[in-house]
Length: 449
Image (cartoon, rainbow, N blue to C red; front, side, top):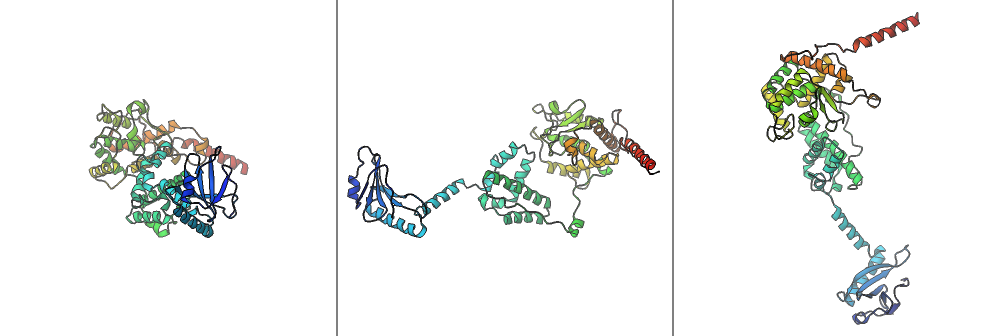
């Protein structure tokens, strides 16, 4: 047993007993003194100037410089007999493990880990850490993400987030997919992957257990048998839905606006009369949209008729254009309202997003290309154009909306006034493109001759 000099007080070696401990005192000018037992190596009594006395086991760890310390207990609560028994146990731990403090240190670490333990429920609960993080980042669909995880991982909410495995998450996704809700299964897995990346960045877990996971590539049989995602309403269905929507109050007018303007279903619920209804257009803030792009719809005759009808449902306590019929606040509960619209219209099942697809389809029939359609409904331009081309192309977008609205007005028998242009089956830019192509052909023909 090697020992280092005690700089705080003199060393003394004698058999340590309870009587010795009772008489022990600190010399004048010192803050403490350590008394060494002459029978059991490592056993000491630490006496402080404040009057505190405790049994301490001193030892050296292999390969580590200096003397280490293990506190055995305070005197007089810990008597000599207890101290000697504890010192012998510490000596045995030193021989077996090389560190008598290892067990205590491990227990402390486990206690600290238990204190820092976070369950899945604590992280994704209402007003919890992850919800606040999504809101700070301005994620529009934060409620959808949290709902997908709360429902999909309901059986694992009380588990430590560090114990959640890939096998458990994939098994839950497979369970959801087996009920025919493959889209819900994919959403749950996607949102969980994003959540686990956040957990890694915050130190709640060491690694994302879904890192590198990919769905298997669909086989030919799966591609053939898979139902096409979404649909566009036929002309006959547009007429039926339009007329049925006129009987469903505020929601009916919101549905008509979705058909005319192509917004996602949640976007019109945030429209306010004082902020978003302008003289020449309806504007949707970029903070609402999925792509973070602001989206405008021109004020045409059909749009004005929808706004005039919405005025009848305006609340004195709310500035919303389409307030909830129950609360007067932001509208919600689309599942039941869409089901009622489908029943009233007597058409095949469709979603609110299908109204957005229907508008794009009508614009295509009117001769407007995909890029113009994407701009009209607030989708990002393709490729490098989104970086370099910042022209909003409002004039041609306005023409595309007017052509589509004229098409719909003709179907439903609505009035068409001067500001709504006649149905155009060709893109107004097509003649210019044709002229340029003709010049190129002439140029190359002259060169070849």
